[in-house]
Length: 153
Image (cartoon, rainbow, N blue to C red; front, side, top):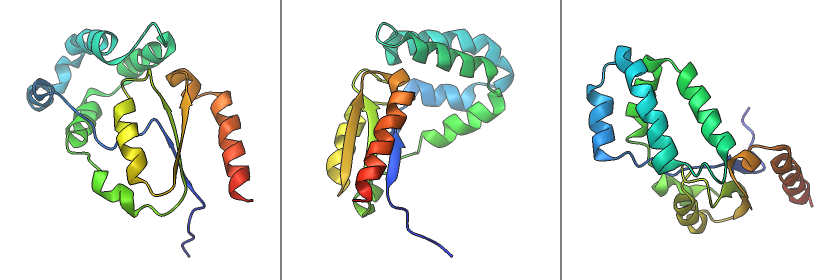
């Protein structure tokens, strides 16, 4: 028995992942056993080009911990799959309320991507949090509960 959900809640969604051309080559060619050599470069790349560590040092620390704990074989497989992840054409078919939590300073969860998603979703609401850490906080849960309570009205 399938039931229709009341709404979708998305936290830092991306409708596609933009991997640079050299990243695609690296994913394809790089052998997982050499991941330990590559990990410092990945951390540097995140810190330098993808994350605003002044706005959210905690996000950088969290991703570094994830990189330290990851299985390089699973990471390569996931990164290969994400190269082709695009859902733009599916968004207009979502006919439920959608609540999106995002942050203008979270460049890993591209704010421009979220801005492009909003007009494609027929019934979307964006709550812009101050940073990624707040997007995954008790403050977010309070806003989520308020949204769900308002759905029942």
